[in-house]
Image 1: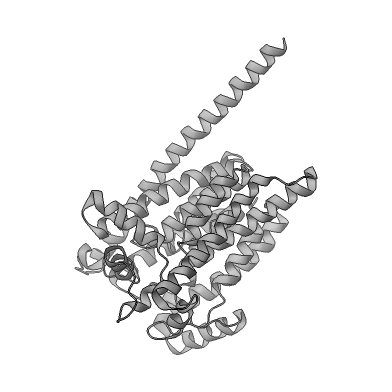
Image 2 (image 1 turned 90 degrees about the vertical axis):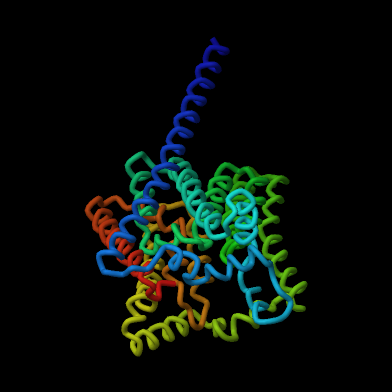
Amino acid sequence: MENSAVQKFSAERLKNISGENKGAIKVFFAAIISRLVLFVLAFAGLRLLGNSRLLSEIFPQSGDVPHYLYLAEHWYASSGEKANLLVFYPFFPICIAFFRLFFRSYIISAIIISYLSFGIAAAYFYKLLKLDYDDEKTAYGLVGLFAAVFGVFFISAHTESLFLMLTAMALYYIRKKNWLATGIIGFCAALTKTQGVLLFLPAVYEILVDAIREKKFCKKSLFTLLVPLGFLCYLLLNYIYGGSFFKFVEYEAAAPWYNTSKWIADGLATSYATGISHFVLSLFIYWPQIIMYFIAVAAIFLGAKNKVRTSYLVFTGAYVGATYFHGWMLSGGRYLSSLLTLYVIYASIENKLVKNIILLIEAVLCITYAVLWMQGQAIM
């Protein structure tokens, strides 16, 4: 009887795991299709506006893309006009250089990485959502991600898709208490974006909660120290190529970025003042990032009300704070579109009408900004 019960439990568990994996695979392909659909809609919109820009003009020359492509091909420089590219983290260029061995083109390799990473991110996000929510809320969370306001950066050669994938994987393995996987993935995330090192916070929170509850410390959780080690490796790159562990701070403060750290209120005030004096840019850059800041802050309180996992809220708060701790920011909207836990909070909303209205606004803005980005507007 006991063996029969054990076998039945094991069979049911295997069935659930198999079903979860099948669902994740479907989500992977759905995510890829969603990016292709966005690309087609944006390109069609570009043509309807009478713009004849070629794809070869759009993708390799937009925003920070040329910098990542240069680093993938030439790596960092200790001197000269390219020395300031030290402000860009190395993991994305490393991935581009690796994929280029197979695809023979740096820009094609970068775009393939973006698409594949977005698909994997969605698959892991599906598995993460299923840990807490039913099928309907999981679906809403995924569609909310697919319709991200600045989702165009998930089809371009930027770090957003790669970082999104690493975030989804890290949070999933934190929940599964797979600390080695968390450490390795978090290490890569910390070498992708400044915000990557913040994945250490939800890991530490979950470790402390488990230690208090079980009254013992899991030694394997020390693998999570790999996450801040990733950031230390980036600082070491600064020392090797710039002669200072914080050389990137000096480069960021100089031309062409002019970006220094300020209190959040001061940074928002700068965005507001700049937006008032530059109406067109305010529509593309300043108003979106100001509005999205307050939405993100409100989302944290909403998440607490809806009992979203505390470690997610810790990560969300730290991410928003670190992102807006800048004096002259141009990419706040893009950065927040990569904050995966915002879509968890969105999924937690009970009112379907509210969720559908948010989704409609998201989708309209997503397509609009994608068209404007392809048109060459200042969507950063």
